[in-house]
Image (cartoon, rainbow, N blue to C red; front, side, top):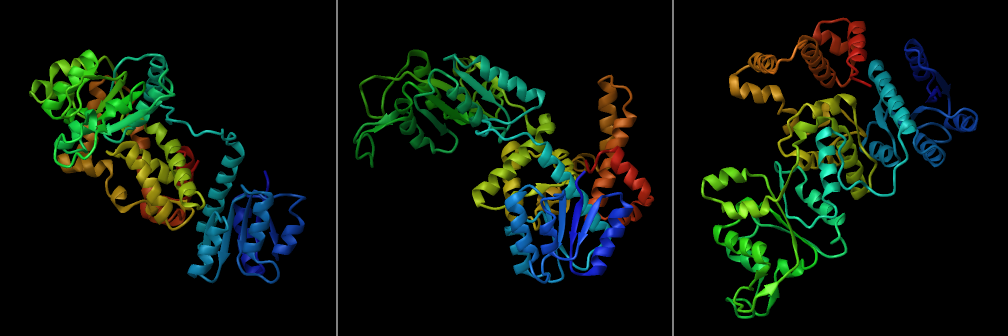
Length: 465
């Protein structure tokens, strides 16, 4: 294992790190100047660097720049006794992993080093990125079913109905179906039927002739004509007004339609993909959606799982969205701690993938450091835990636990004590560490357990791995 480098002209700081890292069994090298460290860069490259920002000769920022040119993936923790805005901005713009103002808590500093070491290992173990970003990301079994369905439908011209909660990525799936179909070279036209006023929707879909209504100064081709030979994606189809449902049914039945104010029948070779977050069967029973149109659209149904059903995908999605936001903003990619990642994975996130993407963009802009812990997440997310939601239904977290036990027993599950106990202990320790900023001694005191017990539990529950 490559060593951790400590660079500081202050002998007492080097001594503190030497004792702390030695006690933790972490291999290290200590240098009194950045220039001295640079001389050894070719001999024994570091796994992590902890460097003061202001030193005689080569500064910490200059050293970091030189290091990044040769070893761009090496995490650098910048220390400074000058906790000012300029220093912090300069450190992060230079690519620092984290910013450690002096004086610092030794346990917190060691935790930072461990997180940086873990990040370094991930950088080494991570497979090389491909040239193209995946169209849709998902490793969970529910998403694999979606991928298989897209593959089976690749050569089909059949109408598809995509269902799923808001924010699950229905348009992404529609685009993937188009991109892998024989129509890929032609247009993909998307329209949200719920976002367009009823009076304008008919003209939007079918076009209008000049003078058809006030303001119609020229003939306009509608979405069906624009999508000729390609794919038309009708999002939120459940909100379509009844009279337009009738016109859409006619198009799907015989392929013909009229522009608003027109008398000449038009045809368009269009594959229709519809989507909705609503229960169309229920709307049919309520008389709000035509049953014959429902059956025309429901030729092949593709259901997208909510994020609650694919929690294992949250870490890979979060890393993807953080990298995407960083590219868009031209900044360094933020990193979520394991505790923050586990916290996110435990949330219901009713807005699904869209909410997670927005959250990651917020983190990129608003989180104070490069490494983002639970306490750095948006307040509304931190305040909406599953326990709180359950308490709203029954009053206490104990009632929520009793319901969970009852549900598992009803499903015939056995051996439920161990996983529930692990979840309980993980929640306790994760929240305590988030509250103390990762300081284990303080977290152990708050929980009423010994630091060694806390460390063992962290390892057993894989909280920081």
